[in-house]
Image: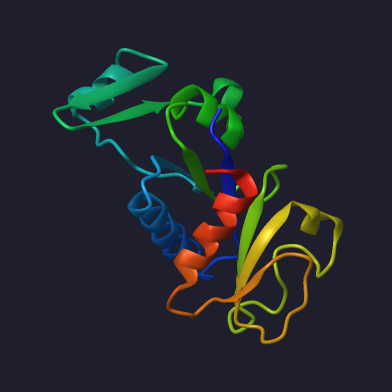
Length: 173
């Protein structure tokens, strides 16, 4: 299974922006990067399309949409509960060099928090709390934050490169 790093943070903290920038940087460095995005539901397919019919009329548990140059796997979670990112990576992204996950803050995986005090008073987990043992870095707008892991200015221009350096050193991507 490839190494996994979760990018966590509260709503509007900049998780997607940082995740995308770090993915691009790691790809530029020659890594085969794949991502998992935790969401709160999405509408991938529209009623009446062939793939919708496969799921809703054919009752297929999983459908792969395959086209030249791209594919999508659609389906429902077994028992209605989502799979953990490590299970998703093992099943669907095993050929990655590294998997970057946006969200899944409660999973016991290495993580990088994007924390903007300008948006939220507190980080996802309390300062210095036991969950911080999973942190490999933090990007924040809090000046002088001391932590047992690298802390970066969330607005610095080379943030993606610096986070990519930490990921390469820490998880061996």
